Image (cartoon, rainbow, N blue to C red; front, side):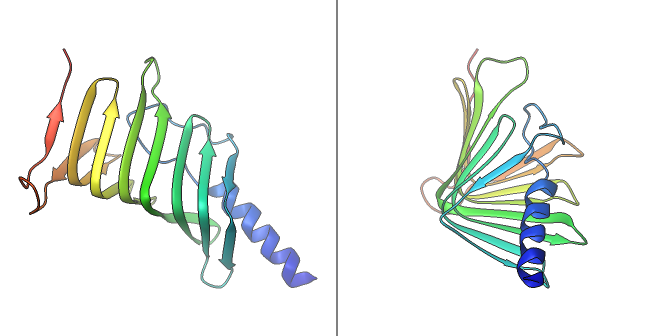
Length: 165
């Protein structure tokens, strides 16, 4: 019973300590609850890792993430790293002061919580209204508000940007 109670406490703590994924949109309030739905979860208290599988849906405030698999790594009850994988991973968030939401699609999204960096890989598409960005790799630094992107060797190997007037 004690082990079961410890595991449930760990899962509860993990869910409520997960910070929001960054975008140029509204930052999710810390008191917004996090809801995770999945077909299964495996959690290891010793390693601080929880893996959610099967039609995973994470929601917090105006942020939602859909993935096939979501891995959350924590240390000392603080979330350090989140990685979502899928075919594809879908992110959506309503931007503050704007009618259009931000939508992103990638094969893999990695969020390094302690450094504030987000890495999206695998045919990345980011859209807000009529504006569109595509590439193979996108890196975003929250603290520096700096974006870098790369193409791949397939197709024309570059990135594409469409900005509406």
